[in-house]
Length: 290
DNA sequence: GCCCAGGAGTGTG
DNA sequence: CACACTCATGGG
Image (cartoon, rainbow, N blue to C red; front, side, top):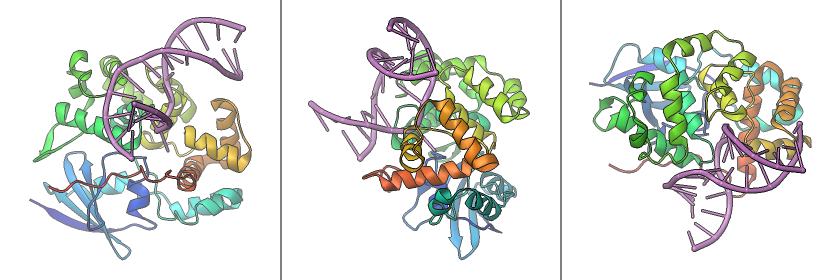
C-alpha cells in the first residue's frame, strides 16, 4: 500500500540535495521526482511549489519523520548560508545557484560502509557496489528494492562471498569493519565530539582522513567537518591558493569556514565539478526503465 | 583499449 | 613530515 504526505521545507532542491554525491541510493525518475530506500520504506519525493510531496511504500505514518530526519529539517539552512556568506566572499558566490542544497543525514552504519567503498571509485560505481550489498545482505522492502544491510546482517557476510560483490580491494576492509565493530561502538561514537569521532573512525581499516570526515559529516551530523578529496584539493588550490597535506588544508578550512564548514565544502565541491570539463556529468544515474 | 575514480596503507628518504 | 608505490576493478 502507498501513503502520501506533504511537508513544508525551505530551501530545498531535490536535484542539488540528492544528486550531488553525498548519498548514493536516490535515483531521478523521468518526471523529476526522486526515489530511494530509506530505512524500511521505498520513498518517492517530488516538489509541488514550495511543498515536498512524500510517497512511501509500504506506507507508514512515520514516513514524514524519516524524511524530515534525512533532510535535516531542523537546520536553518538560510541562516547557515547567511553566516557563511558574511564570512567568505568566494563561498558566497559559490552558493548562489545552490540555495536548495541541504546536507543530508544518513544512517551512521550505512554511511560508514558507503564511504569506505567510495575510495578510488566513481559515483556510478559506488552506487552499484552499495546496490549489490543491499541485494545480497539486506532486506527486501518491496519487490526488487532492498534496504541497506544492518551491521548484524553484514556480520553474516563471509569474505569469499564479499569478494564476489565487485568491491575490489575494498572487500577485505568491509569484512574487517563488519567483523570487528559492534552496535555499542556505533552508539558510543554518536556521543563523541568531532575530533574524537574522526580519530576513532580512522582506527578502522580502510578509513582515512577523507572517509572519516565524510562519515562525520553525513552520518554523524558534524557540520564542521570538511572532507577533502581530489576535487576539493583542486578547488582550494584554484580559489584560495592553498596546497599541502590533508591536515594543513583541513586546518585552513576550519579556520576559514568555522562551524558550518561542511556546507562550504558542498558549495565548493559542486562548483569545482561544474567548472571542470565533464566534471558534473558523472553525478547522478538516470534510472533505467522497468 | 585507455583512463581515472568523492583514497588508504605501507614503505622509504 | 613528504613523497612513491600499490591496491582491484568497472564505468565513461
